Length: 130
Image 1 (spheres, one colour):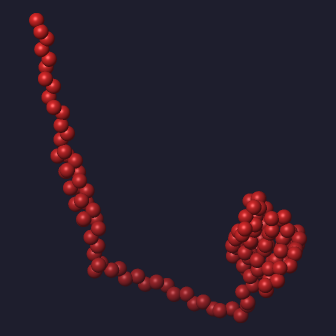
Image 2 (image 1 turned 180 degrees about the horizontal axis):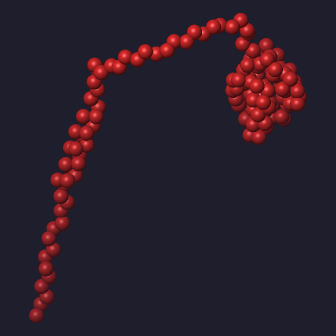
Image 3 (image 1 turned 90 degrees about the horizontal axis):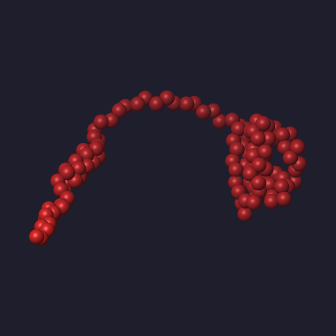
């Protein structure tokens, strides 16, 4: 007596749901990318009166080298300073840029930033150089 094997039906993927989803996505993107170029909204923006002040823009740069020596660049001249005297030098300064060596520890830069902010400087920028 021999054994008879049942023939397995051939498995095939039904691509109909996949095609339906692709067409739905195409329709969604076509509908969502149409823009109404005539739908403008009029907005009445407030205006500001800016008075120019006669004060000069006082901006200095604090340079920190890789040996943690501090310099102030003012009018193109680098003057060495002590970090303890920084708050007295920044009395009437509105803008400060801190330039530090790339190899400096982050804590040195953050200590300088906190001292500059405590001196009342409004605008502060940070640069790194090699």
